[in-house]
Length: 135
Image 1 (cartoon, rainbow, N blue to C red):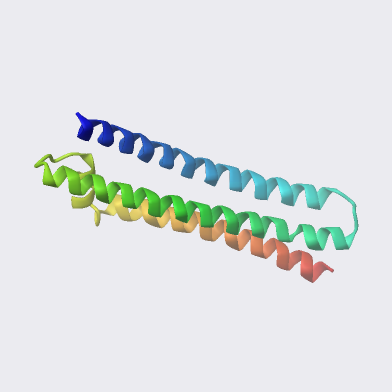
Image 2: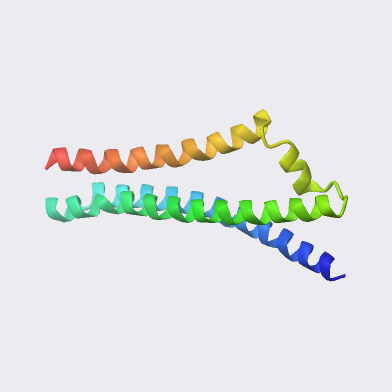
């Protein structure tokens, strides 16, 4: 009974972490895009534009750091659940994911996440450099 409650609680936490990770991606894209659009349309002067152009980069770095923290928390929980499933002789979803860790689908998921964050970082950095060069 206690084991089932723990498993259910951790499975819910995995689902919540995954949901939060997707929200971070969406929110960071919206924030960076919104900040850049605001800075390019408002006429507050070059000093405001220069310092404001750092905001997309800071938002991207903070969001990426939070995303990585969620990723490692998710990995830790999944490893624990997979270990418990194997100890119980139960071939559950987490054990399945461990067995299929190197599949093309798993690699694609990891690569797409890395590419997403790199592209957002490059965009944010490029925006700052363009504003710096314009000044």
